Length: 89
Length: 198
Image (cartoon, rainbow over the protein chains, first blue to last red):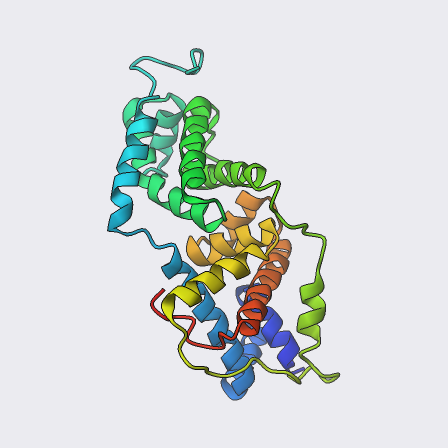
């Protein structure tokens, strides 16, 4: 049975198309190609994802923070020979 | 040698300084990004990342290699984020978004209120603020699922291990997170061009 817009949009939002049967996945793909509204829905979700990735992308201004955090964490490193029986406090 | 190699597992378990340093250098940036995206303010995100690595150092001998080091670290971090946000997080039980989405379809399952089309490009600071606001409306688990999938781009099986959910549960979390965000952004007037240069 052809999937409805409700079915297709649910699969797109849940991100479960890779877990559908090959035939069902084919039908969903065909539906998206034929249905402008579902295609728009899929495009909007992709753009929201892209926006979120851009929003939290680390930049050159984060280098100092990363270096500082690395230094702080390294200060807590076990000395050579430190083992599981002697965990850091 | 890759950090996820079996030989590396032994070195991490033995708490060899070089192996531990490699883990920190490799994963510090992504944990900082995830902590910020999960909703912690910058200073608290840094603290959470630092605490995550200290927990990792303290418990490295427990690492059994069954999951990736990365999976283990994200799990530690998100537990810390979750505790940190206890005062501000939203209850997960509410599922109003299911009814909101359902109301967009008619009885035969076709769109009756389809997503709206392109709109004028909003200015960048406003888009960024809208995205932040809308993410704050999500329950923590939904936000974590969204961040791990969209920002960190992790595969399904790894996200399931981190959040300790089944693939079906993850699908429900992502369905509600993505629809919640889309509805919120649409209500704020951002109907397209989400890919503006944030």
